[in-house]
Image (cartoon, rainbow, N blue to C red; front, side, top):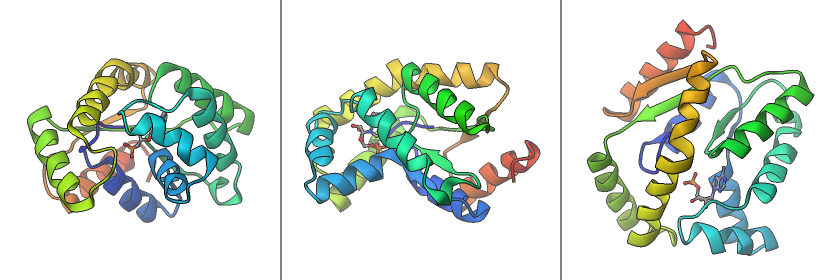
Length: 186
Ligand code: AMP
């Protein structure tokens, strides 16, 4: 978990590889659909271009389907989900049905100033259609309002691993893997 620019996508891919499990990024699934101009992609784009969350019923159904794929049977790392309280509840329900409760939630901490610098840099390099100034502001606000409060929920369950997102990509991966080992998850 982490706001846009925290490095969560980069770290999710690296940690999943180290653990030998798939990284499942809801943002990537939406982007693939936007690129392929599917019905789901057109719907997702109408929200993501404004920095808003795609409606829960769409996102939740997509995650439920993805987690039922055979490659997720031995474990998985979610990137960008859950992002609000309703998604936490849905993920709990999906995992209860599978008999495998959530084992850990990794939160990357990055100060806002640093986030803004990184996002501007990425917008220059990648030219993502959802990296407009308004969408970025909105996305960070949505994170603060809806996603950041979820950390307290996972902390109260004793499964929150908080890691500083400042440093090199390699340093942060090492830190996360250390925390996962301490928690018996790697
Ligand atoms: P991300 O790459 O994780 O920043 O996701 C890009 C965009 O996809 C977000 O700004 C949302 O519009 C949408 N999205 C990704 N994950 C979710 C989610 N869990 N719930 C709702 N919308 C999402």
